[in-house]
Image (tube, rainbow, N blue to C red; front, side, top):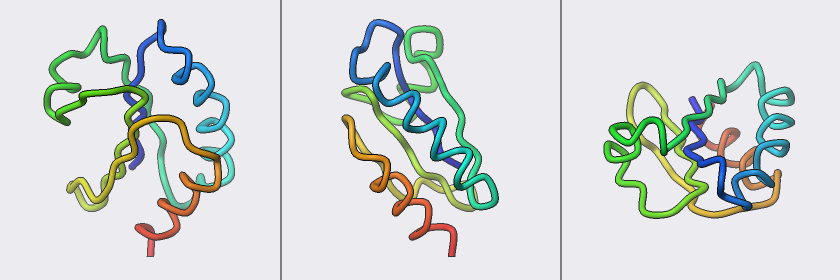
Length: 86
């Protein structure tokens, strides 16, 4: 599971949205991508100790296995999914 914690006012978050949409399509057999607006879901943001956005978490078997803060190239997200989907 990949969770994109974002906010509508965040420019890097808006830049990340189409990248993660492509990743979700390309990696649909390996991961499910969810978007969570941190302004509307402060409890979820607090649960993941979000201190900056975009904040993308990678969860495997119910446990946080990695997280990325900021904007990265598409390949970084795909690599993270590949690493943890094996």
